Length: 228
Image (cartoon, rainbow, N blue to C red; front, side):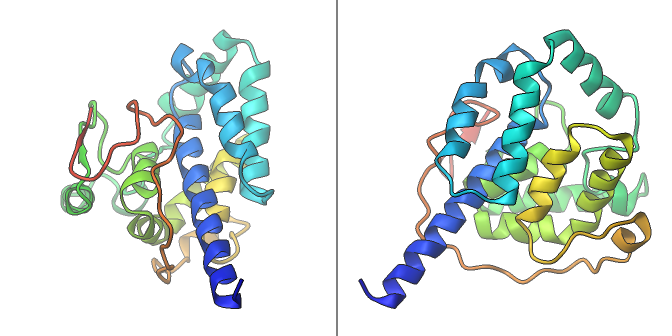
């Protein structure tokens, strides 16, 4: 096997692992209902098929937390962390635009990205910058564009991560895993996170195949099909 072919295979494996991390993270950030808990064995298997890495290890630890904690406790914790506090808001443009008029244009731009990738999304009442939705876009519809979008909102991701770390929330592991799939080192404090430049180099996309794992809205949707 030539060195070039070996490099391509390694790149394809890395690409696949990143997509799996993004898809599993999307599930982990969803409401911890019976549907999520029933899929834990499948998500464990998805991660077990990937090479060991910090993102994979972080998500594996979080899945163990979901499996071990009482369901009622998981629900109560999720509501406390994400529904009753804006300090960990999972809406990426909330951290950059707040509730200004500019945010409407930003949300429209998210929708346009999805359309351009052939991903027709029923948001089920969520805003299009909802992090689990962005992660599914990166995992299923446009891995390169998805990583670019996540990197564009790297400061938002890091601020959410830092807030979860400060809260000592198990969900900090999920944000840590997401940030670890992006180039560069995560900042250690809020000031450094806010100073992040909203940029990131595109990465090569090779060897893409449909993910054989559950998605937030059922099965992996091919471009041009509705997810709903």
